[in-house]
Length: 268
Image (cartoon, rainbow, N blue to C red; front, side):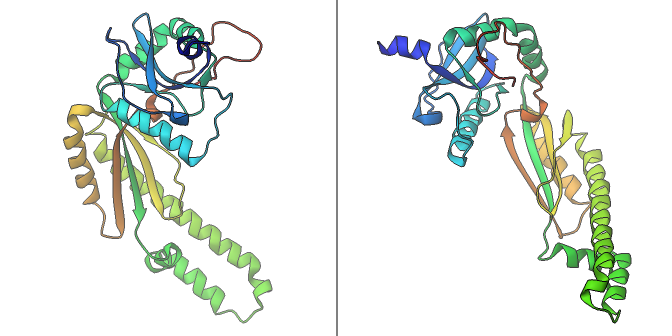
C-alpha cells in the first residue's frame, strides 16, 4: 500500500476547524503519536488533522499536551475552532463529509469568533493556610471555632459542631468567591466581549474566568486585569494566561451525515 493511500484511508485525529484560504499550508507541526499535522480542505473550510492507526487515544498528559501544543500554534496564525481532545474520524472522506454537512454552523462560529482569542484569569488566595486566613478575617468563624475549643467535651461529642463549623467556613468562602468574582467581571466586561466562569479546582482559588478578547486588544485587556487587581490587597494573586483557542466559546455539535456501523466521529 502506498503512503498516499495509507494517509487517505487511516484514521484522522482532529485538532481544529478553520477557514480554507486556497493555499496548501505547511504547518511544520508534529501532533499526537509524532505524526505530521496537515489540512483537509472542502468547500472553503479546513480541518487540521494528523494520521493515526489507533481507534482511541489515551487521555494522558503527553497526549493532551501534544494536542494543546498544536492548537496553540494554530491560534497564533489565525482564527480556529478547537476540537476537543480524542476525536478521531475514520478517513479523509469522513472529514470532508463532516465539513460539508456542518458548513453553515461552522462558518457561523468562525464569523462570530473571527480575530478573537481566549484569555484565562485565575485569582487565588496567596496564603499558607486558607482556613486560618478565613478565621482571621471573618469574626463569626473565629467565634464559633473558639466556642468549640473552649468546650470541655470529648472529640466525639463535638463531631456535629465541627461539621457545622466546616459548613460555615465553606459558605463564607463561597460567598466571598461570588462577591469577588462579580467585582472583577464588572471591570473586565469593559475590556472583553464575553466572560465564562469555569469551575474552580483548588481550595485556594477565588475564581477561574475565560475571557473572549479581540486579538488586537490584548494590551487593553492586560490593563483591565491591572485595574481589577487594584480592588484587592496583596493576599490575592492574579494570574492570566493566553492567548488560547476559544474553547469555552465554541459550542459546536457537529452532525454526522451518514449513520454506519459505529460512529465515524464524536460530537465536538
